[in-house]
Amino acid sequence: MEKQIFAQENTLKRDWFSPENPPLNPAIVIITAIERLELERIGRSLRKQYGSYESPEYIDSLHLNAYKILPESIARALMRMGTDFSASQYGAVVFRGLIDVDQEALGPTPSSWQEIDKGKIMEYGFICSLLHGAVPSKPVEYYVQRKGGGLMHAIIPDINMAYSQTGSGSKTELFVHTEDAFLFNAADFLSFLFLRNDEKVPSMLYSIRSHGKPGEAMKPLFEEVFKCPKDANFSQQDATGDAPHASILYGNPEAPFIRFDAAEQIFNEDAGQSPEALEHLQKFWNEAQGLIYDEFIPEAGDLIFVNNHLCAHGRNAFTAGFKQEGDQLVPCERRMMLRMMSKTSLIHIQPVAHPQNPYLVMEEHYGKIYPATISSTL
Image (cartoon, rainbow, N blue to C red):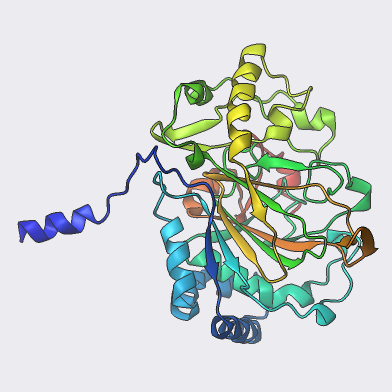
């Protein structure tokens, strides 16, 4: 009996130290045609039963539905992400061909996310939420992101924000970042479902695990001496403010988590970094740049699932609404994807959650909460 117990305990151990072969790219799961058809059936069935993926009744039963009806290969890949933070875990998985996107039914890409027809993406919301439920985690929304705006956001290039360091940008490279790096209670997991990418824009992923065992250059990143302004969705004055300092790396010193935004912490001259902090960041960035994975070009129906504590994301610059054909750029429908965020514990975010909505995070900047006057109007 003792030997059996020991063997069972051993199976739970992970290889925390593998400096020889650190993961350099995400796992890729190829979805079969049968699995796609099953997901389509699931999406239609759930929409008929619940109406909306934001239905309280549906969210209450999310984990049960995820384990009962998701194809096993998908559920297993996601369950592993919820328990494996070891040296071999990259922190992202790509689901190739997760769904078939009916481009005609989707219609032209709206000019901005505000104009999205939610009815056209409702079934996609059910499918994405099931993936988060398999981790298991619960979809959440952030007031700092579009004043909440629901559990799923459309990310669409906006001509008025083409040069911004945001999801609505296009003309400049979106530097790798963990989502909402200026929050202590940022999302644990993210999903990015691509409905269109005719411009063939490569996605960028960067995992802290790609460095292998943390070296000397990383030790200073555990110190709480770094500033992180809010992102480019905010005015300069509103973005910087009088926020406290925080660390870049945190958690287990041998297998750390990361909270990082290259654009705001290194290249934003108004960030207010001390010369010492900036020097540490630049040394880290010099090493990290060589570990960015940008060989994956998403196609319609692909989904990238990310552990926001292990893996940062970004994308290359592109010309929205134009694709390369031979030596010419020709018009096409603009890039379009759907983002969902989730937390593994609603209990831990309640100190910063809306008092009437446990899924709405009211954190504004490094623990600061939006004023009660805003909260009371929601």
